[in-house]
Image (cartoon, rainbow, N blue to C red; front, side):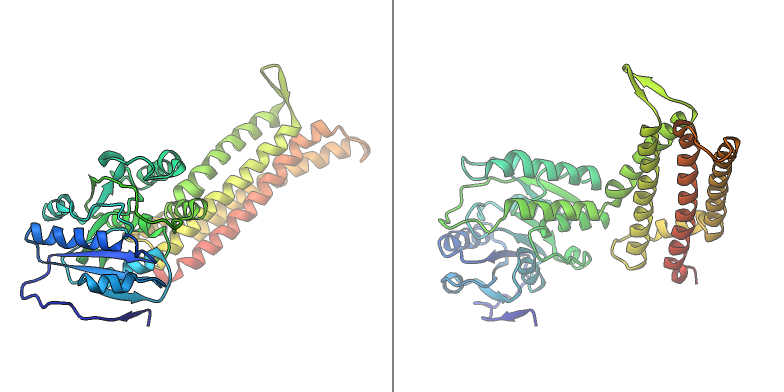
Length: 398
């Protein structure tokens, strides 16, 4: 079992719970009481039937006792991780809407009504925006404020077309029934990105609301690791959008390599008084092979994800792929490339024969040899790739 549950609700509620406030906690005895007072105050002042859940993720201080004292429901989550703690809390929440916030008092839990209003308007996910709501002095490290958050949020908007400008805000909410459809997996800080990304892939209604970020009350070091957690967020965004990781770079390399190879195979060119010849031809040919590898991995990843249900709504991609691509077509195109490579190889051999198999001009012969090698290797790679793609899609065709 991942979780151990202690304490019953401090009171029984006759009517359905509308809001669950989930607070992940790891050694937050300095600030937790402030958060709980504000959370319960919010429910009372706004006459909302709700609950406050503290998920203790291995605290060695008095955090759990403080939560009990303030009549919060306490859940002990054994498996470490920010994402794991939040998932544990949401899964046991009874509310129609779940609002998540950090236990360091950097957010004001008494000001959650904008989240509720947006949920009542039909939104599935509501994310706080600290840049719109205001960031108090020294509340966010310089790199997070001006580099990490803006950059990763920009990538998230470009990759997944969501109107969110603060992907990593710690104050956010989700409808409980929407959460049940997301199948969230990540247990670390990248959980913040996964929630938005999978909601976008599932075509859910996502919006944001301004929130103020206050300087937290803890005296210890933050659990957040700038470079490690930043990389995990970036890695997740790239893996869930292989177009930017594989397809677009691969296509750019293929276009650049093909243009350069075709031009330099004819003869040297001069750009800005710099002569480009067969040495550059070797590199442009390498771009073609490298670009093909990138594009192949794009299709491998998309098909694998479609067949194993890692991404939602991938049936159209699989259907179109099966319609447009086949092993026979791949073999035919691969053989055409391979035969073209053989043609250039024969030309180079004839040139060598013309010199009675003696010394040859490398500048001349490389213009045939390099394209020959590229075409033959590309042809074989194409055939192998289509065999593998065909193997992946056997089940979907049966």
